Amino acid sequence: MIESKHDLSRFDSEIFELIPHRPPMLLINRIQSLSEDASGAIVTIDSLAPFYQENGIPSWIGLEYMGQTAALIAGYQLQQGLVSPHLGLLLGTRRYRSEVEYFRAPSELLVSCKQAALVGESLANFDCTIQDKATMQALAKASLSVFRKPQ
Image 1 (cartoon, helix red, strand yellow):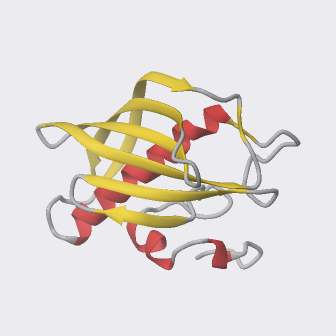
Image 2: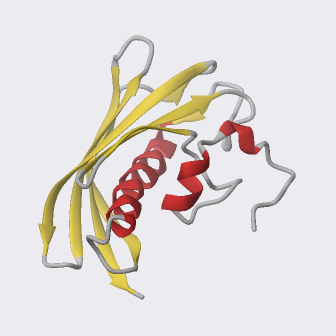
Image 3: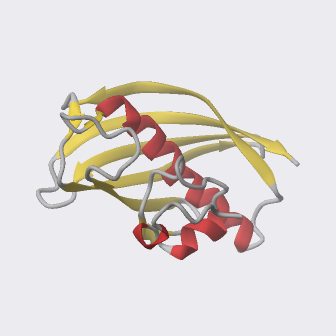
């Protein structure tokens, strides 16, 4: 059940059907694009966003933006009957590089993830980027490794 103290209008309702994250730890706001091997999400950077500080949101939080955006792919695959139910566990990241120290408010970020490799049914790799939605300036990028634990 979703707690009513959070403003759920900040989120696409479809997100709640695709991933298990809930406020206050649901960090992506809207779905931009979604397919069986790629996803795009919009993150609203403002004073209501989790982890907001005076300077904005620390750029290392971008790793979780990427993880939740990659999770949309697994949720879509499950909806389409392409995979069995599983938990996605972030094993690690390679080359997380951010061009900024903080994601500044007010702004919107475009987080994009593409499934780069699938090893059997248990290991997936994703290439992810974060861009400023207004300028399309690249702000961060990384590769994520996710273990798919069957339920």
